[in-house]
Image (cartoon, rainbow, N blue to C red):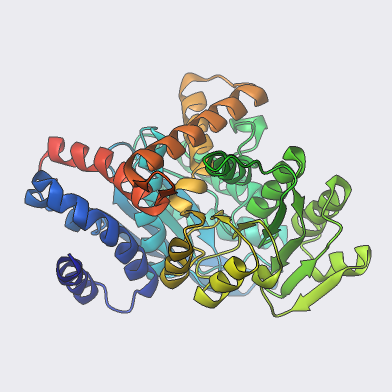
Length: 446
């Protein structure tokens, strides 16, 4: 089997050189799916995995705009339309200096499986730009978003491709993007998700990824007769996903002791409560400050340039960005007693880190399963837009919780290795693959 995986990856590497993030994502899936394909020859005959690993379309474009000094700035825009076998392309837009084709292809590839797992009719896509909204005025962000959408609008539609937010693209950016699309096309349609409630957004959408990853962790803990209540929790990041991970942890009675940003992490042994979380939201969402300010205000430790994985905990939520947790970090977590890791970010754990977790037989959930709550509620937003209705907060939250329960059940069904251990990576990959693969076979070689 190792030979078959290597042969497949050699072909992928040859075609996608200098794209390490994408190759990492494909490798992780190939290790689960190729053995499954060998047992199900129809998928091998139709070369489904080879086709899923090749984007249907990649769009790259120039984004010129004027800053507040009247100077022309030029950024690069992307949209990777990966797979539309089960529905319109669906996936976020990321505005960050690190954005390149490799990162967006990895995210789009992961999105194919994640969207399939939700059970909703959504294909996989991802997009963004190397534009950095940090430190920019509202006027500059608006001008950039309008220029970006002036090109992107040609390639998206409610029945073709429905982008959402991601790192660097929150409610402000979605609003500017939606306004420009409406201005150009002259129509009010559900072309973007993550919109404000005033113009077609869904309740619970901002909270969905953070809430969903906690719901998934709770499902995993139940398999071992455990609850999240009373557990000590380490969270990385301090953006949207991290904030609502903390909020839901507080609601279920867990104690969160860390948060981080690109500068370092804070350790609050007393735990982050509702009032402290309100401060974090104001700090990060309004003032756009640094997490170090939390340590000064609440008199706790701040570790500059470090990540929080050496703090003792029961449960860890990597909620920041890809490859933030390596094998050394994973070993430290396990040695310190952590027995559950659920990814809130996309691919935050390296392949070697995942192998450490699997060897220790702890509960580990890959992002394509555990952070699918965000895109799940985006799909629910699409449904509400199509029906011209709005569901209540409780109804959307109930649907989100049910979707995470269903995803967990699918992972257990296809990932159980023995009565005591579930390989959630294997379960998520196979569960997501089957639905997309069967649709691709039914639709022919397109």
